[in-house]
Each structure stands twice: as C-alpha cells, then as structure tokens.
Amino acid sequence: MSNTITPKTRCAVYTRKSTEEGLDKEFNTLDAQREACEAYILSRKLEGWILVPDRYDDGGYSGGTLERPALERLMADVEANFIDVVVTYKIDRLSRSLMDFTKLMEVFERSKVTFVSVTQSFNTTDSMGRLMLNVLLSFAQFEREVIGERIRDKFAASRKRGMWMGGWTPLGYDVRDRKLVINEPEAAVVRDIFARFVRLGSTTKLARALREEGAVNKQGKLIDKGYLYRILNNRVYLGEAVHKGTPYPGEHHAIVDQALWDKAHAIIKESPRKRAGHSRARTPALLKGIIFGPAGDAMTPTHTRRRGKLYRYYVSRTALKEGKEACPVGCIPAAAVENAVIGQLREILRTPEIIIGTWRAARTEVPNLPESDVREALVQLDPLWEEFFPAEQARIVQLLVDRVDVTPESVDIRFRTDGLNSLIEEISASDTATALVA
Image (cartoon, rainbow, N blue to C red; front, side, top):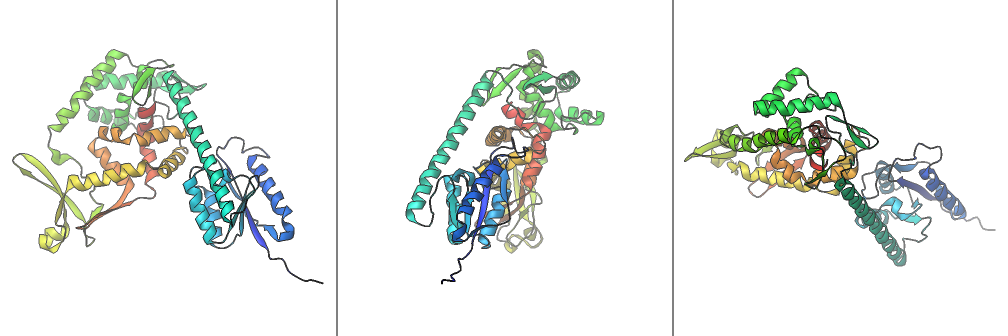
C-alpha cells in the first residue's frame, strides 16, 4: 500500500475588469471570473492544487498598464515564493500588452511559477505553450489597439459634429444630458472677465482684482493668472468645439460674441512682444533651489550683460566662495541645462505609464473624465508649454523635478514620485485640459 504524499501546489486567482461599471452588483464579472478559476483549481485537487486565501481583484483598471494594486500585490507574493500557479479566466485579464506580459512571464519563470488560463488551456513550462501564449497575447493586444482606434475615431467624429465629449466643465457651463448648458451666473463672470481684460489689457492686474473680489473657478479655488489665461483662450466660449486645433460649430450656445473675442485676442497677441522688451533678468530661474554641483553644493542663478545682451548662468556656491578652480563645474549656461530638463519632462509626460497615472489621479476630482482627454492634454504639452508664462513654467518644473545634479560629463535629473498629483491640481485649477481638447 502506497503512502505517497502529493505535494501541495499553491494557486492564486487574478481577476480584472477595465471599467467600474457593474462592480456594485451583488454578483459581478469579477465574481464570475473567480468562480470559474476556483472550479478549475478544484478539478485539479487530486494533483495537490489548493487555493490561496488572498484575493487579487482589480476592478476599473486597464489591461494596458501594470500599475494595478492587486497585480502589484500578486507579483510581490510571486517573488516572495508564496505562489506556485497564477490562474486567470483569460490571458488578457492579466495583460493586454505583449511587452508587459513578457515582463510578467520573466518574473514567473524566475520564480518557477506556472501561468494558467482557464478558457485558453496551455502550459507555460514548455516551448509550445509559450508560443501559444505569445500568439494569443498578440491577438489580445491587436484587439485592444483596434478598440482604441474605434474610440478615437468616434471621439473625432463626435467633436466635428460639435458634441461635448466630457472632461473638465468650463466655467460658465453645466453638463446636462451630456450637453453643455449655460450657467447664467457663471456666464456673467466669464463675460465680465473678457470685458475687463479688454479695458485693462493686463492679465496680472485682472487676476489680482478677481482674487481680491473672491472670484472662484469650478473647483471653488480662487481664479489665478493661469486660469484666467485659459479662459481667454478657450474657444468653447464662442460656441465652438475644437479637435486637434481645428474648431467646429458646437451644439452649445456661445457666452462671448466674436467682436469681444477679437478685441481680447488682439491684446493677447500684442502682449508677448511688449513683455519681451522688459528685462529678462526678471525671468524666474526654472531650476532655482533644485540644481546642485558635483560636490553636492547648490548652484545659484546669476546673469551678466554683454553689448546689451543678457546671459544667464547657474554658478556653484563653491566656485563663488573659493574660485572657479575649486569646482569642476564652475558655471553653466542656464538655457542649456533648463532645455535639457524640459526636454526630459516632455518625454516623460508622453509615456503610457504617466498618462494612465495622471488619468487616475485626475479622476479623484473629475470621476467621469475620459482617459483620452488626459492623453491628448499631455501629448500636446509642447504647444501648451510655450503659452505658459515663465513663472508658470517654473512652478511646473518645481512640482515634477526633485533634484538636478550636474557633473562635467552629464546632467542627472531626479523626478518627484508624487509630482503628478500636484500637477493634476494645477491643471484642474487652470482648466488646461479644456483649453486643449474642449
């Protein structure tokens, strides 16, 4: 009589749904996925398969990113050797990205963990199983990209018809039945802003006056200069819907007439030339307080004039105190290092991981905000950046950059991990996304 003991195989079930719709039901799709996976594990009971008690459920998270709370817990337990088999209903529940899935599989293989899809049965421990996995995942990624194209095409077609497609609601409007409807008290504030700007010709003076009067935006925050500038450039107030820079007649009514708009924009077009005539020494140093030399000493902004032209620099304090020979990097041109930092910021803000993270942070203030609005706002940061005043550019850099270390060979930039949440507050306060895609 054999007394062979079957070794236990610890199985974890992972479930996911892209949207939160229906998750409040007593029995939802996550429960259905889990039930099917648990039944599969039970069918392998004689082989020693047992279900681990922890639940790994991600409701309302896209399969196009790995930044999911339950998935992160699952991968941590895999690497801690708490799991032997990961079971899902379909492979696209784990990921819809071939690149991301490859990363997950590398962790599984390193930890000797097997992956099982209940409805697409295969074994990842052999080469044929891995081949089938890649084939199926390629189709999952293709399906995701096709869905994305359809959504973008539908969004573009809707905008061309003048429909409101969501996002931050502009001051002066409310959303009813997915349409913009004029909020008359707020609309009066918008008209007053345009009229007073035409009289004053200065956003700085107008912003100061509005703040003293306690004028607030949609989020209940005091109107600042940045928010004011977005209002003055938002063509939604002309009754238009804009898609990728092209205006179309909107379904909503205008708040500002064309004549008043033209007067305001004649001033806006003229103002940058006047500001350019002022001393550039007043331009805020973008990296003040966050740029350091090779020895870790802070670098301070300075400037000099030659033949009437201004030259800006960052100088290490060591060089200032002990002479240039005491520091390998005595001083560096401000424009060069600032452009390097801004260039990397632009690249970072275009990455899928940052776009998804920004969208999630923004949804805390705007629950129904489409991911496409945030993606388009961040992708189009280049033209928006040039519209920011220097002080606004400096504030955004300070929000996102923790430290810049300069050596004779390189510039090392360390970004803030919590900077995006602060940036979202800045964007929502100044209605940036609406100015770009509304």
